[in-house]
Length: 174
Image (cartoon, rainbow, N blue to C red):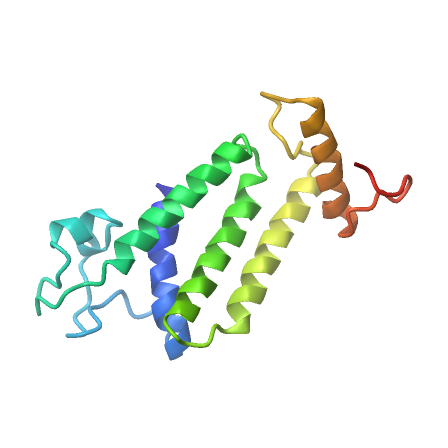
C-alpha cells in the first residue's frame, strides 16, 4: 500500500516539478479542465479504474502512465522488502528507487530532470542509512541470517559509518 501511495506522489512530482509548480498546493487537478479532484478520485489505481481512465468532468482520457507508475512503484517496493528481508534497509533502498523512477519519468517526458530531485532523494536515502547504522540496528533482519549476510552487514556498516566501504582497522573486507 505504501508503494501505491508513493507512486501516486511520484506522479505529482513528475508532472509539477519540471513545470515549476508546487507539489503540495493546489490539490490534484485535471490538466485539461483544471478542476480539483475529490479525495475519492485520488485513490491509487482504484480511481483510474472506477473512472474508466477519464476525467469525471471533461471526459478527457487520463494517461495510463498514472496507474502504471503507482503499480510499478508498489511492485518495486515489494521486491526490495523481499530482498532485504523486511529489515530497516528497505527504507533507504525504496527512497533511492523512488528517486530513480522520478528522474526516469521526467527524462522520458523530454523535460530536463532537475538536479534537485536527484540530490534531495539521494541525500535523504543516505541520511536514513546513516541513522539506521548509528542506532546500532542490524542492517539485515535476524530471521534468516547466514555467514554471507553477516559479511554483508559488516560491509554495509562500514559504508554507513565512513562512506568508503573500507574498514578503518583492517582494509577491504570480502
